[in-house]
Amino acid sequence: MRRLLTYLRPYRAMVAVSLVFLLFNSVVQIVGPLITKLAIDRYLVPVRSASKIPFSDRLSADPWTGIGQLTAAYLAAIIIGFVCDFGQQYLMQLTGQRAMFDLRRQLMAHLQRLDISYYDRNPVGRMITRVTTDVDVLNDLFASGLVTIIGDLAMLSFVIIAMFRLSPGLTLLLLAVMPLVVLVTAIFRRTVQQSYRRIRIAIARINSFLQEHITGIAVVQLFNREEKSRREFDRINRDHMEAFKDSITAYGWFYPAVEFLSMLALALLLAYGGFRVRAGAMTIGVVVAFFQYGLRFFRPIQDLSEKYNILQSAMAASERIFKLLDTPVAVQSPIAPKPLPPGPLAIEFDHVWFAYKEEDWVLRDVSFTIAPGETIAVVGHTGAGKTTLTNLLLRFYDVQRGAIRLGGVDIRDMDLEELRRNFGIVLQDPYLFTGTVATNIRLGTENISDRQLELATEQVNLLDFVRGLPDGFNQEIRERGAGYSTGQKQLISFARALAHDPRVLILDEATSSVDTQTEFLIRDALGKLVEGRTSIIIAHRLSTVQRADRIFVMHKGQLRESGTHQQLLAQRGIYWKLYRLQYRDQEAPVRNAAHSSEAAEPSVRG
Image 1 (cartoon, rainbow, N blue to C red):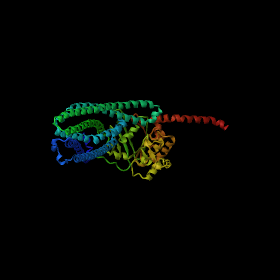
Image 2 (cartoon, one colour):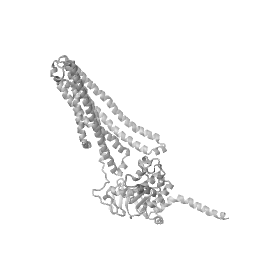
Image 3 (cartoon, rainbow, N blue to C red):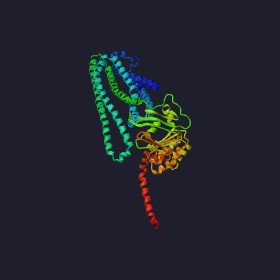
Image 4 (cartoon, one colour):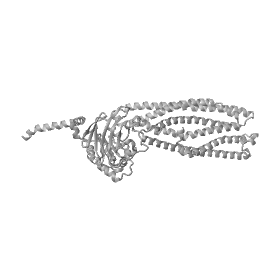
């Protein structure tokens, strides 16, 4: 709770004003029954002790005039209460929204700093629940929980004080039912607390399931998995419904139970007060005022029970939110980062060992150096550790042993933003954001001019396609680039990397998911892309890597071979086997066609 209250600290002035409104409203709630008592005892059922009634000497002796004055006072109290209630609600709702804005912004900033390994372990739907549903629960706490609890307690205090001043006996009679109210409230609180916890877990599961299955809807439909997905979702959705049913049941019996106890207390008041009035020991105005105070007395108790549940739900939500915020960021910039040297940058892997899980090594003692301006290709079987090399170079993960240096500086000693600014990367699965073609290429880098934008798209053979769009560079792109082919999205990714003019370019299986025509366009653009900069090309298609200055062959996490295309073929090792496997099926028809033409040649001449 102390930690949650820190989010209200910037808005403490608004909270203070809201508290003032709330206290005024609580006082005004006490005035109404007193005015009713005064009207009854002085004008409707006059008593001899009317001169001792507070403020009675200020009222007119004429009943119509006096009742008119009291009516005006009652109306003024209602208006003041309305203004105070509106001011308190408005200020606290505004404060809650601003506090939630700050919390969501903090969550988003932390999610962007977290290591990639965190996202490997946690489903996206769970994180969406933290930023949306859990934060909304905290908004309920700030807007209608904390301050309102203080208001309810103030209301109870003022009501009890006012009742004691009118009649201690009736007050004790009203308080006699309190043990039963406390017992009912405790049972209700425990029941609802358990159901709320189940509801939060169920909501997180629903979000995770929806995110996964909506993202993969094409696969779901392709394999006719709709019915199975519906059954799985029905099960998760039913868990959510059952948790809510327990909550509904608890609310269903709690409010009638409290209402019954309150009516029981008022019945006791009526009986006891009636005898006291008949005995002349109490006025009718006091009994009527007690009826009004009784209603005001039990309403905050009901509200406190609900506010306590909001409090419990907020504690559960804040526990999950703070667990996310307290997740340590393992990969972060050092306190005193070293600057990158100017000029060309050499890349050095020095006896690097790395494992995603404990000592299940993905890379084993990998060492190599890439000279500035050199184009390196990395090939190997699936799982050989090719992509891991780039993940470590970009410091998405930190190595367990050895070191990686850029320009002679250990990348762990560099500022992360400065490190990654020097890289441009094109992934196998191109990712486009909602926006336009231009915003997807710039990605927020405002210093990329329109001319640079055109030049980048022209170099990757995309300019003609963009000019053919109805709105050109301002053509709208929907979520994940829906409506664009994989090749078009990939070319936009190439333009994005080139427009940022990186010192090191990384192409990670950039041509594996495109058609042959797009691959020719990309291969034609590769010469312009790698010109004047260090480049690392990871590919399965060996046709893409043959022009590289050197080719690294990865096998079971180790660098097994290194050399040019011709040198590696001459070694007749792993690369030669990969080459034979990839081109054997293509060469066979060519050889057969050649033999057929040779056999047919004499008859043609004849």
